[in-house]
Length: 514
Image (cartoon, rainbow, N blue to C red):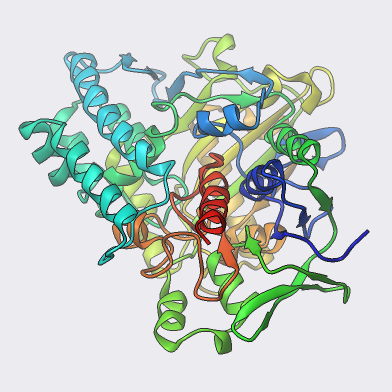
């Protein structure tokens, strides 16, 4: 087998798999190198206790782009789809949210939510159109970029005068002010606030959190699914598509450096000392790891190095896995609802208070949680009659004051379980094993700088035209032949495949133009 390829993809996360498959389908000879023993990056299923398996990091599917499933003919098997969000109330007066409907909220909130959802999904559809395109460069004279900018302006104007003004006013605002103005039910306000900040270093009062809420809706208007076999089954489906297209996938092959000669990439070198040659290298690693570690500052101009150094990418989200000998009791919730998405965020101010300690390098004593019992509808994840709880827990700052010592980890896990006990009083006695992944663990296990789920904060200065940084928004890096295809590139994180698809299209378009 030759060691020279038309393209080498560094990292087998879902975007790397999408990008490699599309390049191979165009006739390219593609090599994909993955550091871990299984592909999928943060979208993998693995055992964390004897007989208990879980989606290790990402655990729900809400952003997979239809263009990706269509291009690669994907048919992911789903254990649950179009899941209801059950927002727990400590008195058992839970709120159910699905699509544009709300049950259990205060009088008038159902109608207000319908109007809110209609506006937000319309704005999200506008963003979604540009999530599946290479973003235009600012200050460009290129005809194609100017055309995209003109279309963006036209699409914003098509909203109509009133909605256009609302969009421009809201896009940089915080979600707190919007929910306080619109709704009376504290649990509803808390649930919406949580959706706007999941996976970020932001609180409900932080600017840009309406934008992050729209980003979440831009997948499929907030429709949520749970894959059968965990998120790893989605990555396995992508790997199958890549191999069927002719991609050579090699796991357990961490890349030590991307080789540069005379100002352009010439290949990669692995930690094991193997060398593979190509004039096109596509990195699914995060931007900081790609440019500051695999490439090195000496190959970049000073201004770009400074911007990359200052890119904000410190994770604030942990993952908690519990092995249970049986399901806990949740007063006020029907048994069938254990297969839905459950959130603990009782008020918008509760979410903000949970965020406050993270500003100073401390974890939340009363965190917010997004919870699933994936084994309720997928028996393959736990022994018969037993169950798995999978929870996203915020806030857990990457740069925790004093570090993530064993004591700090135990303290945060205990804090999360204490919150669970308020709504599931008997849960502690059903726990037979547990695992907590802090952002530091996520960095180590999934090779993501700072353990940030999006490979970089989603804020207006790191979004669309300026993601990951100004001058690098079109997947092509300032080293000839080097491209990004991961969550740190446009449009961002979540298991969407958009960045991988866009990167492949940008590479093929550039080669065609050349």
